[in-house]
Image 1: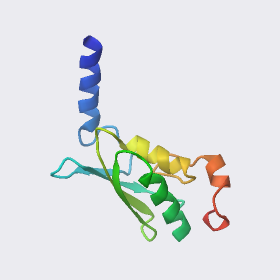
Image 2 (image 1 turned 90 degrees about the vertical axis):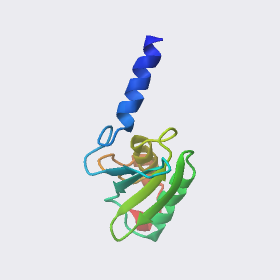
Image 3 (image 1 turned 30 degrees about the vertical axis):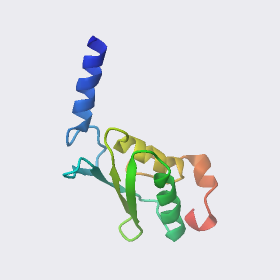
Image 4 (image 1 turned 45 degrees about the vertical axis):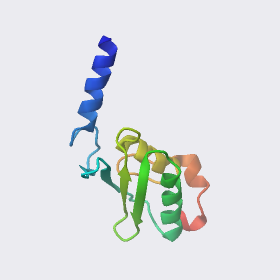
Length: 118
């Protein structure tokens, strides 16, 4: 019982604006309860990179949509907070071979990227 209370309080704290986010991220909540986060992608290089990240994010339950912008080297991700959080989004991007804010890319995934993406 006490464990459930502690977990519930922790979840509420993580969902509060400003909590559980890395430096440089922006998050907001829309009127329908969908959260929107902007994640910086400093290693984004080309349209193939954009497609790889969009495909990786599209395959994850809890992500409603992702707009990856090559010019600003960022992704705007709409997600369901009960199913997804920014840390999981960053992890998904890093597992695809790219840096996501301060989360470094997975080196094995990076080696499997197209030559133009390295």
